[in-house]
Image (cartoon, rainbow, N blue to C red; front, side, top):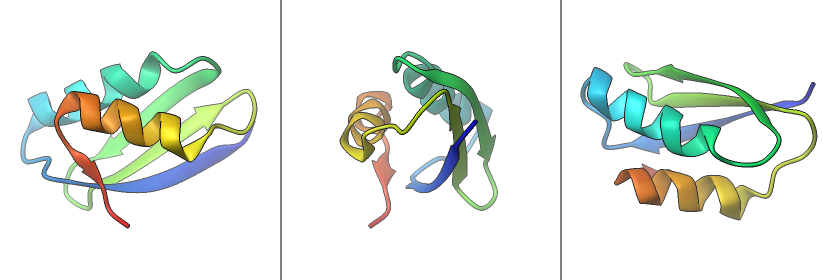
Length: 68
C-alpha cells in the first residue's frame, strides 16, 4: 500500500490532530492516517495514489493548512 507524508501547519493539540485524521480518513481509498503532532507530519496510507488536492481540501476542511 502506498503512503504519502504531508506537513500540516497549525495543529497544537490532540483535538487538532483528531480533526485532521477524521477529515483525511473520509477520502475514498484512505486506509490509515498517522499524525505526529510535534512535527506536523501526517502520513496517509491508501489503496492507491491519492490526489494531493483531495488531501489538501480535507486538511482545509479541518481548519488547517498543508505546508508548501
